[in-house]
Image (cartoon, rainbow, N blue to C red; front, side, top):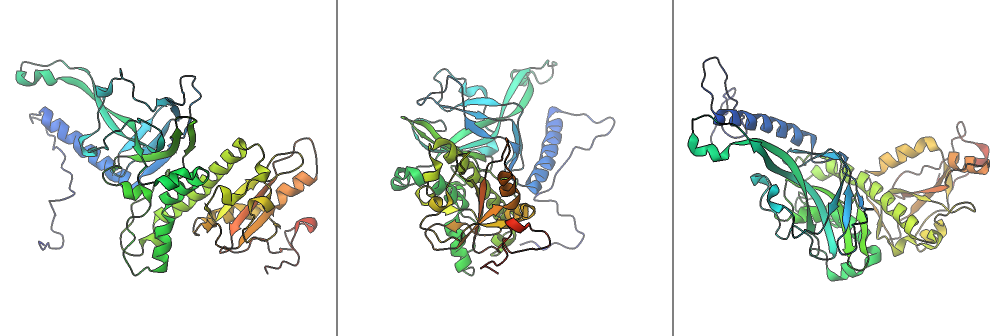
Length: 426
């Protein structure tokens, strides 16, 4: 290793060279290209500092187009902005319908990936049913021809007018690493994939033995890198497709993340870096996404038990509750065979803090005997009890027993009929 001195310029590795412009200098195409590359390198450094993930948009859902069929399904992808691990920004300016089966007359050669993003997984396009990861990555194409002078006539055939920075979507099949037994467990599949992506097994093992191997890579997505999933890809959603039923589900938050800086390295980064907090946010949002889907697709959600669809729950979640006026879940049925306390009231002013605090806690493993707190929010229950023509949906909040209890009495702010005056938890 070469020794460098203080205040000695280091001119190799990570430097950016820009063209020095001055009057009288003869500029060539190569010079201007070098200047473009330097500007892009600056932008990439800013992108890396922000972190990789979805900045906004890029929501994925099943397409309602009549052209979408079970055999040849389509997805709707909303406009959005994302940043990949290379610091490249990817923007979709309008919503699109995305076909998942390559058409035989498609113009596959119209665009290509950046060289630095290769190699991509072979079999990029879907050829059959299974579980897939949808990603967005950069691509480029060319437009038009530029006029040329008599100089360098040997390269006149390359006189492209514009190089267009674009993007492309691709699919990565997940079976394997998912096993046949896991794929056959259809009821738990969505939850299983999500928590494989969160890497709960690896992170729990690290908490048990932190002086063992460093936890630099964990979770399903890390296991796909760098060959099947590149640093150019931004994961958007998981989808499960069967030929008989079409797209069974599209799950965003199992893989979607807000921009997350790469960990700082070292054995303790898991406890302090952005990734853990953003995965906690994703656990909450993934559950809410799945519980909404389960509520809408089930004729009688009041008969649903969590253990039949989930292996893990986030540290905090919210479920619509059944009332005589509205359909919802029954907490006694939903949490059957689990250790939970009867619902108590909490103030709505504390709900946001409860959710924000929950991202720092491990998920709840169903069947483990871990205590689950249940809460009704005072403002919600009080409005429903007041009656009227327009009443809100009743809901129940659950939280991990490892979190602080949020139902203790606060006589200066609580309401007489919606307070817990002699809580067994105090």
